[in-house]
Image (tube, rainbow, N blue to C red; front, side):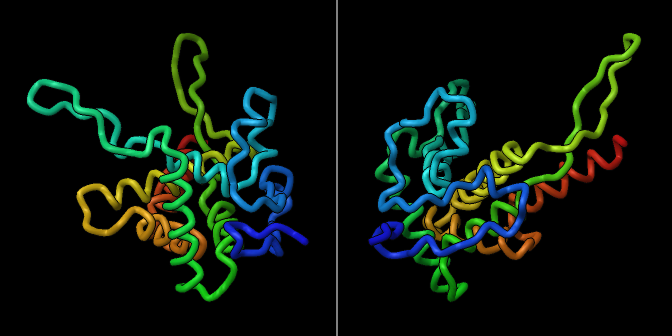
Length: 200
């Protein structure tokens, strides 16, 4: 019998883009927690279940450190609290299922594919002059960017907001899957690609 994600959602999903098939792992696992089994191995993160990668991205402080009254105050977050992060992602997937009426794992994969920028810029120094040049983004890096922006978008929306973080994450996933410009991830992707286009 095949494992279901959180004992609820099956893994009968497909990765529509060829470039992403090698780097988005959807190996059936009940609870996405492998205790760092692939840590330190080359391309180890691409062997990790994609939901666990999202959970790991949710273990971050909300806004980093801020200077308040001359002192640096660290933002509240889930740093190191994997059970909290698992709960947030599970609740977010429930909300995604209610809104989209389809497997939330498929919606998450679509969101990751849509949110990864295709081009970015790099700095080149030639003859003592520094200038920007547009470069293609590798498949692994596109997925890294997408996961980073989706989780960061959820934190930015939830900061000083009555909306719970799980609802903000669900919004971000649904908007990114539909390429909606309300999504923080889609905004960052378009901004990165626009800068790269002007640097061609």
